Length: 317
Length: 236
Image 1: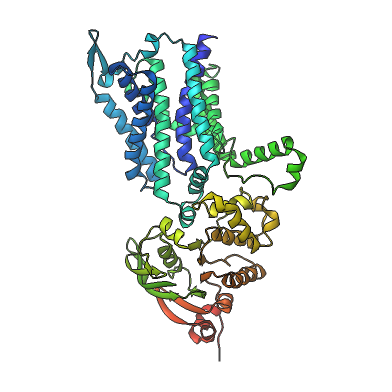
Image 2: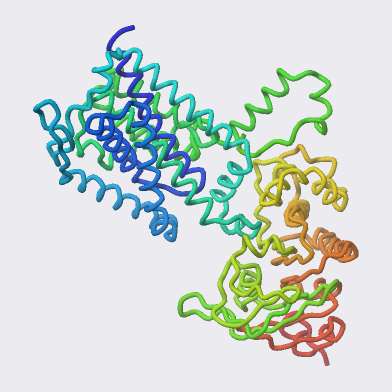
């Protein structure tokens, strides 16, 4: 496989975690401009674990996800009392704070006569686990997609359970959900933690592919993009944000036909979609129509006519 | 069954409810009547735990539920049908109903749905259709059906006849009589005074956050002041 293609596909895979992270919050009705902070925390935490503490890759990945999830839990308490715009601004402030902390965060140890570890704005060099284990870029790409498939499968299961229905219900109408007996705080905190952990996994994968982390890449634009992916691709299913990532990174950034005009085309695309399809290409109505079409086309005639015999269907599935 | 004593609700400096006391007996239909901004909805929100009261006490079946959050009030058998229908257009009727009992164990869902649909012959044959196919009156019926999915013994409704044609409204009010026969106690918040009092046992009139009148429905309908203020009738 072409080296450039592997790199582009790996990027798409990693950024997908960030897009899914923003998506989880979007379906519960919250707009976060700060998911890049959890991506950064996951990246640093897992990098520290493998490069400095000598952990293996998988424990490092889990540790990165856990650290990001824990940070999200801490953020959830103060910010979920804010609603709408205030939550968006709160998360933005948090993410900038995290980035500035990494700008001054120094924690280095000497390994084989060389200082390894985060060195403030100089960045964090030497996350070499993947190279030391002699894993090729192609194999690492496959690994990224295997993890992504796992996270996607988990999200699909969630969307088919009561948890998914409750998240979407909160996103549609919080007051209504509350009057139906939904514990708003609990489910919103849970969504924030899951979203944080998913971003953390992406960050951990990013750290080990790049071997080098720099605080400034975890800036606001990364968060804005990850929000836009869900809005472009659609909020009806977890595939939506992936379509958004594919369009932006696959087409606009990597195909180079738009070279210097990427942001102009991207911004225009977002504006057009907000006008014509405010909940993205694969929005809830589109997903419903697709599911119904699938049932009518591929299920047996007996099932098609009845309707009473089919299993209970969950919204948002 | 429900007792509210000296309830106060404030939003910042705005005092929405200033000392409301009311009582709903088991099996009763009670109407809470008042103009926009009189404090009807705030009273309801305080009862079901969406809003925390600033002062006062609320008890349900002898248990103090003052300030209890909604997710702990609903399991006690209290359900609220909020104002403005608020059904999910894109979802089917069945999916809308599922959301109503979402906090209850899924195992009993089929059974609960069958029981609820028994009361709604209009909805029962159409469960697979999107809710947007329903007329305004039918959507209100769906909102009420969704409220019943959590097995309530006490149902509160916020202006269920709002925006409905007179015939559709009548259908909704008739349903309350059926529900009562099925053992559901009802607190009805309404501006549609005549129709509400026609089915209610008793009524409370709320104005500027205070109860100004309280009586049996028939007597309230006779009341001069109420007639002038809410029914638009001048009697000689």
